[in-house]
Image (cartoon, rainbow, N blue to C red; front, side):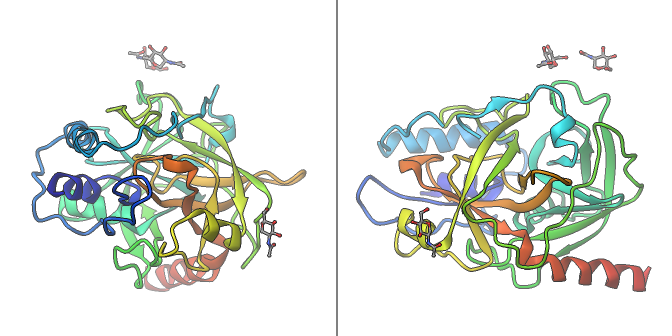
Length: 309
Ligand SMILES: *[C@@H]1O[C@H](CO)[C@@H](O)[C@H](O)[C@H]1NC(C)=O
Ligand SMILES: *[C@@H]1O[C@H](CO)[C@@H](O)[C@H](O)[C@H]1NC(C)=O
Ligand SMILES: *[C@@H]1O[C@H](CO)[C@@H](O)[C@H](O)[C@H]1NC(C)=O
């Protein structure tokens, strides 16, 4: 169990472990257990440990896996998407977020916790915008965090308020590759609609590297009744979360789910939060932080920031 716990602590999507087919969850292995983490271990060596662990425990092979996504050709449709680097020194994708203003990025509190824990602080963390192909980041707009606010009710658990706002030192320069995304209306209900997810997370449960090329997948949004039916009865679902029928995986934490209305700009529906392991297992939906629920919170944080600065 130990290596599983370590891996989950460091990796980007809050994950809930499930032992074997037809047996109840082993327990909730959530973020926040950093005691045994060797900070020098690379993400891929941690992943290796996880995969070994999964194999040891004879997990049933899940169906091949944003898992089942497609390569994105160009970045025009995902210009709001950013990649948060594990360290500011060298680019290493850890989790994702969305540009919601020239100096504001919305992501998950879990993602912020991981960067904070790895670097002993969140200030100075690097955010890469305008990136589709992670093999070559020379054209990316790199910005550094100078203010961060995680929701104060986030406690590391999958059911808590997994959302955070980051402010960066210098404005993004908007272009075809870098744009902000519109926030939804407060409490807008997207269930029954199909969103699009973009991400660089693992494309294969047996993979050991995050995807270099941006992937996308269609993500049908479920209502809460349907989601609860598809997840174990003790799943920590709340009304501030939304489920999508998509197989997200490590590296997809904070990944925006986007809805394109027939006319008008794309809207930010949700941010990748947690799923059961192994990724894509039993076609269980992935659980996202529902952005419409937090629109007031977002405006409060932003206005408090400008009152103080
Ligand atoms: C991504 O960049 C690498 C290195 O520059 C290149 O080899 C690869 O073909 C690129 N992939 C795409 C889809 O452009
Ligand atoms: C990366 O992209 C830049 C700008 O597009 C280009 O000049 C450079 O040759 C690329 N590097 C590699 C290794 O492909
Ligand atoms: C929830 O979704 C299911 C499946 O799409 C549908 O059958 C059901 O009527 C929906 N329930 C509500 C309350 O909308």
